[in-house]
Amino acid sequence: MAQDGYSMTARPSSSRAGLPAGTAPPLRGTPAGSSPSRSGAGGAGGGGLAAGLGASAVTTPAPAATMSALPTAPPPVRPSDDDDVLTVDELVAWLRLSESTVLKLLSERAIPARKVGHQWRVRRGRVRDWLDGRE
Image (cartoon, rainbow, N blue to C red; front, side, top):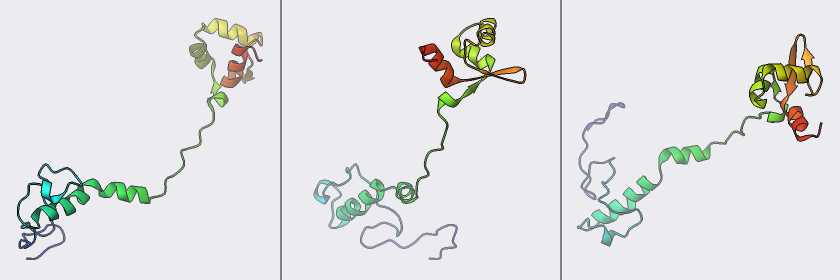
C-alpha cells in the first residue's frame, strides 16, 4: 500500500515473522541475549527472529548511539571560589557575624579588603587565609 510521508497505512504481512513490515516483534518475557530454544515462541524461525532482531533493537537505543558520536564540549570555565569578590552583606552572612562587627574589622584593616568608592570588597580566598592565620 502507499505511504504519504507522514503516516503509514497498513502493509502486507511479512511471511517470515507473521508481523507487518517495519514493526518490531514483541518481546515475550525473553531476556536479551537468550537463545531461541528458551524463548518459548514455538514455530520455526519465529523465536529466532524475535530473539535476534528484537533484542538488538531494545538493547541499543538510537539516542544513545547518536549522542555518543557527537563531540562533547568541555565544562564551562569557572573561576575558583577563592577569587569570588564579596560585599559586606555577603561577608556578614558567610562569617556569621553582625554587620557592625564586620565593618569594625574592615575599618581596622583586620580583614584584608579594598574600598571601592564607599563600598568594601573582599576576596573570599584572602578572608580564608586570614581565618587560618596565614594573612
